[in-house]
Length: 463
Image (cartoon, rainbow, N blue to C red; front, top):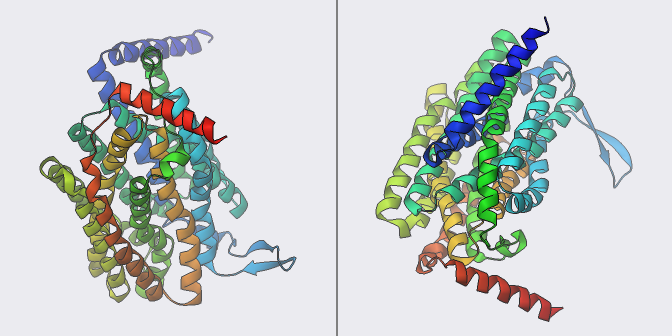
């Protein structure tokens, strides 16, 4: 009997050895790491969206709509009876924690590299998703959802930064980030029907157990190939690399700030609609759980189309990415204001597809732009700048569900969509400022070192 565990360990050891030999070849290493990053991004976005068709019905079944919240100003407990607000807080908990941890995760990634933070993030996601699978109360689900945010802050940021670092050429970087965005899109759009179907026929635990096992697999795969990349990172670190720009200094760059704001605005529509559209569909269309989940799936093809279109246009018109982002923002706003007037499931798919297409234009245009801005205006270390991108997403998903639930509760679903329309339309012209940033050219290593020393000297003089 003792030989069975030893045999299993032997097989695992041999597997790790084979993977390490495969990843020792630079080209294979890039492909395997790209696969690991894409699975991590797919997983994280599935975890966010998979609860859309599940949570409203599940919380209603276990009688958890009433949530006591401390009213500090009056010193007594009030009770929230509205399910929009209850779902909003549960949705937002992940993004709020992610928002708080991202500045620290970006700095850690800049200091120690990308692979260890991603491994930690995947481990936390595995544990938190298992807790969510077996949680039977609002408090436990809230805790597990918040813990997922901590894991995502490390996994998402390190994944995007790893792609930007390994693909320095603008065309290849844009293409690889486009592939990553395709996995993000697929995760976001396939998760609701995936969760709705499994929940309706197999119960709450099954979809989350499957997702937790995917996280475990991705973490083991990363751990198996991590040693060669650690050796490579340490050898590169000895070459007097310039230190990464602190996140607070990046946030003072107007171009980075505008990009971050646009990424946040592009996700406001999704963040506001995801926790509220399911309830609206149930009230207006008598939709079932699988229908509420399926409504997002048709948006996958327009999203992929938007990614491919933006990558192709970037090859011919690299100085006009801001135009695509502005068009995407405006399109999202217009589609959102159409949604409340849709009366059938089929018609509703049209504006949903438009929102997904617009979101793809914004994300695919601006994520490579952030890396380019760091290359030409700061130091080519990407942990902090993609922490800012993740902060933008988290900000939208932190305030979105809470504000959306309150707006629907106090007014109606139409008012919510009008507010989304106005925010997107008003922000789109701001992207016109980005037309100047391609006048900058990347600095070489000597210029970066000189700039870092000059900045350090200025800080010393100020004190």
